[in-house]
Amino acid sequence: MSEEPRIKIDPAELTLKDKMIHINRVAKVMKGGKRLRFSVLVVTGDGHGFVGIGMDKAAEVPVAITKATAVAKKNLIQVPLAGTTIPHEIRVKFGASEVLLKPAAVGTGIIAGGSVRAVLEAAGVKDILTKSLGSPNRVNVAKATILALSQLKDVKAELARRKGPAAAEAA
Image 1 (cartoon, rainbow, N blue to C red):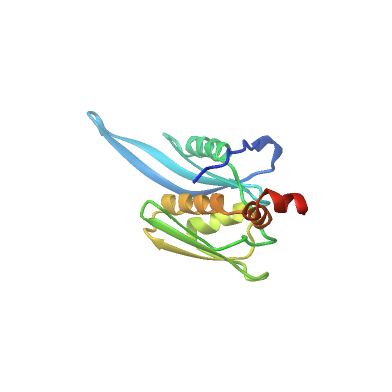
Image 2 (spheres, rainbow, N blue to C red):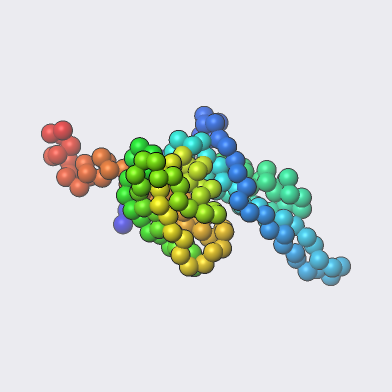
């Protein structure tokens, strides 16, 4: 399976909103005792098809949030939207977490919880049905959701690809 080259998205051109998904206090045991740090998971998106997640650590929470936001802006992806929902159903596994995303009719809303909801809201998806399977680990669920959104195909581009170059010239 060939991967198309990833297009670099400039976060300065977008009006991004950041949302913190999870803060975790982590400790490293050293000779003099425990060294406490904070690990933060942040999602950023413009609400119109661009979304990214980032995770980073620091000694203080605000610094960790700033660092995680910078990572999220570097990892932006574009999500192909079909109106207010996604173009097709997709099921993706990341680690022990699995996420199922299904398109929904207009007015359904985001039927999701936790990390999945945060990522989908940041991406600008308004109507979707989801199910989180396997491990409830917030980080892996968020990464599985991003992976699923990155694997979505645009319907028109996919049809043109399947029909081949002759059909693209005729259209």
